Structure formats: C-alpha cells, structure tokens
Length: 230
Image (spheres, rainbow, N blue to C red):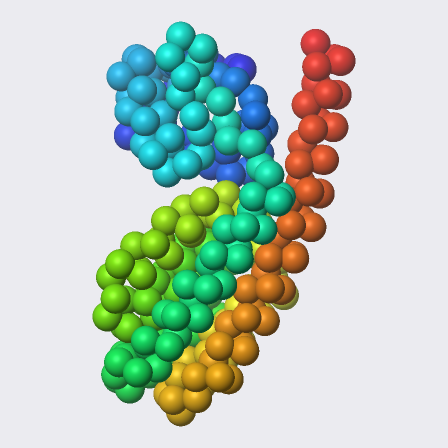
C-alpha cells in the first residue's frame, strides 16, 4: 500500500469506501500497522475505525491475526433477502393501517419520479436514501422492534445494495417503485403495495447478485495482475 496522509476522523469513511468498492477485496487481510502507515496516522484512529466497521458487519477483527474483510457469500445474501422480504411485507401491513396520509404524502413527494433532477447519482447517497425509505415505512407503522430488525438486515446487505445504484436506469426504477408503493398505501391498497414491494426487492436482488459477481471478478483479475507485476 502506498502511504497517504489522512486525518483521523476520515479514516473510517475512507476504509468503508475501499471495502464497498472492493479495493479491499473480500476475504483479504489487513493489519493495524499496515493501515496506520498507509493513512499516516497512529493506531488509535485505525483501531476505532476497525471496531466500528466490525460492528457494522464489514470485517472481522481477530486478535494477533489482523482484520479480515468480510467475504461475500451469494447464498447467504439470498437468505438475508428472504428475511428482508418478510419484514417488508409486515412493515407495509402496519404502515397501511397506521401511517397517516400526511406522512405518506411527504414520502411520496420525496420519491416523485418527475423530480429526478434533484436526485443524487452517487451510489452511496442513493443506498442511504433507499434504506431510509424502507425504514421510514417501518417506523411509520409504529413497531420499532420491526424497524430495528429491518435495520440490522440492511446492514448485512449494505455492501452489495449500493451496487444497484451504479447505473442510472436502476436509480430511475427505484424512484418509480417507491412512488408507486407510496401511492398504493395512500389508497390503502395493501395487496398492491406488497406486490410492488415484492417485485422491487426481487429485481434489485437479482441485479445486485449479477453485478456483485461481475465486480468481484474484475477486482480479482486486477489484484492478480498487480501481483504479477510486483
């Protein structure tokens, strides 16, 4: 790793970005010493960033061995998507019953497809905004236990979900899907809202799996190429 100078407060953000972009390849090992030299900081901010990233599920810290970037298991991801689907269905059921028209209209306005000029094309920003939409529905239904479970599942999927926003058409589709879901809830049409959510999540899952495998292959070839040149 070439050395770069970075303030301690930016270490977490930079490390997270490298993991999400696969610059730190899934399954690879790094140490506090290597990272401290790379970022040009002491081990204290490195240790703090690693602890936070471990809590968020991005890596595993093993005493006296180093840190291992979380491996991506497509079968495991499918299981999280399966759980997410069930949670989202219950979330819609509660939102349809308890969420006010005012709150739903505000959410619908935020995802109005006619306001795409106000959107962000940054995958990280879109991933965060997409996640906040689903959590807003869960919170609107009034069951914070459900909200917390959904937030936990989202943390496990976050590393791949943002890949779904690397293409403009997927961002457009997300705006359309979210808007339609909101308007279905405003009509208190639960079956339609759940059908839309099911299609939305299923399509995203398939797209994310495909692009994840592609990105992993690209970064693996790049790593092998760099190794041969060294």
